Figure 1 (cartoon, one colour):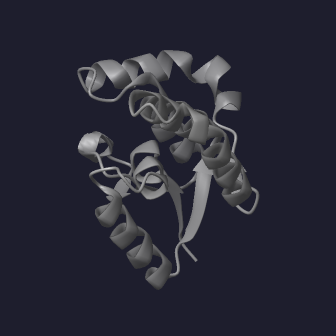
Figure 2: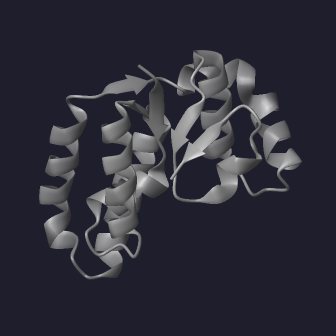
Length: 143
């Protein structure tokens, strides 16, 4: 069975029904499930999921509903494998910065860390809606 990691762009679009890419994200997930791909998460993506959803709820003046949504996210994540990317950071920091520079900043710090972590873990697929990962030669973007 092949394995793929969920990026923040896809996760947020799946969680947030009002996201402009929600329908597209649902289709990507359906295709992944149909293909029998094992879905994984990375710790830094989980960090971003809560932060982005909290910000979106605040912007919509819906902060009073964030607690319930955070509980839903937590419940969903209880049943998934989470890869610890931050453990690579002490030795990978220079490579992370180099990858950011190679992409002229199109990959942000977390995305570069994710890419390097996946290389270390032997995972070649990432589920992402944004095309930034297309510049990483060892990754295949699904989305």
